[in-house]
Amino acid sequence: MDLARAGARHQRPLMISFVLILVFFVAEAVGGFVTNSLALLSDAGHMATDVIGLGMALAAIRLASRFAEREGSEGSTSHTFGLYRLEILAAFVNSLLLFAVAIYVLIDAIRRLTSPPEVLGLPMLIIATGGLIVNIVAFLLLREGSKESINVEGAYLEVLADTLGSVGVIVAAVVLQVFGWTWVDPVIGAGIGLWILPRTWRLGSRAVRILLQAAPPGLDVEEIGEALASIPEVVDVHDLHVWTLTSGMDAASAHVMIRIGADPHAVLDAARDLMADRFGVSHATFQVEPENHSGCKELSW
Image 1 (cartoon, rainbow, N blue to C red):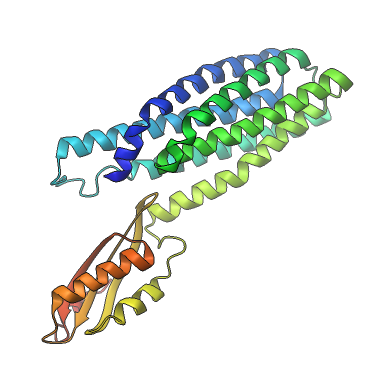
Image 2 (cartoon, rainbow, N blue to C red):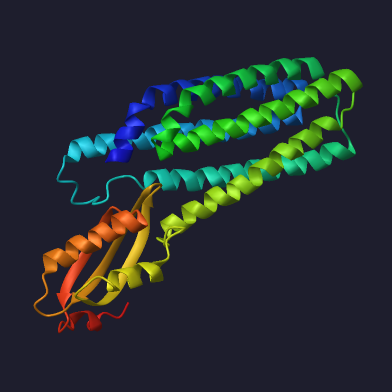
């Protein structure tokens, strides 16, 4: 619930940034078509994904918050983990959009290098400068929230990347004005496309890992098992699972077998403290079993 509240505290700057970028995306896309600038169109394409990303970030925060408020402290019987996975689904969709934009820009850049069209440098420079100003405003609006909410941080990083993209577009426009080199525009556009691709891969990879419930990066499941097994009175640890619910929210579960006569409460407290203090997993569920328990062996998966 802390993640939803942190995001909710920063809904207003996120909404302002969303509106600013949405309005300028329309202006930049129109300007790109009018000036025939691939650099502007590629940056507008990236900005379109930012509009979608910011919109999904807002939607995820609002839906998660409203869901939590409606269900109350007891939670939901149908969505027992809330709606936090919406953030991951949004990230995956965003990665697909980014990938499509990057591929389109690279293909179009190659085509324009062989037969560069006439590009109007001054209008492109004016539009790109406006884009840089919008990105800087959004950057400042989201900076504080990015320290508290993973969702806002994602939007913040998108805006930061767009700021760099706007700088590239301005450089292309200045070179066009001074030297008249039309090939600079597709080169800058391709550079923006190449900038998008690795970010797309990282974003998509993280989303897929979480959706597949892989162990969080940086957490060694074998090390966790050994640490739990080293707790006094623990004789075995099995059925250990560690996964990520959404960005910044890791969870774990395990069966902890203890000696007959051992205090299960003490073992449970020690296991929870270990997971929180050493591995940073505050949501851990343990099933404490006596060492003569054999029911788990019947499981086949």
